[in-house]
Length: 170
Image (cartoon, rainbow, N blue to C red; front, top):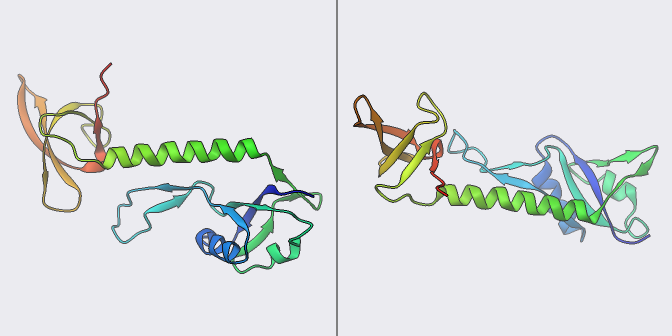
């Protein structure tokens, strides 16, 4: 057999641990994860794209299935009728691209806004309204925006920075 990608199940919430175990064993691992802004600041900053799954690239003639199945944190390879199901390379490449695009967009969202820059409110009672970015305020990731209400009067509104995004003008 040649090197192929396989989907591997992990025990609940053990994806990162298992990826470390596999890398220590010399196995190529792809653990697709998304950067997130949790509500609790002490919570994890990444979430698995596929909870309880990751991808390994191995030659099953060199690495036995039992080694992979009995590794700490593992629940075994995804198999059908006892045969491990390989994942095509193009699918792994496409998955890499999709996860990277999401994470880049997330990082772009986190960049500083400039005073006077138009934004759109994404969440909360003012979702969908356009506003103008005013300033960052003290506190965890808080911003003040100026919302046009009642006879074009601009009203300052304080929001979490994940509730706003830049207006994309064409």
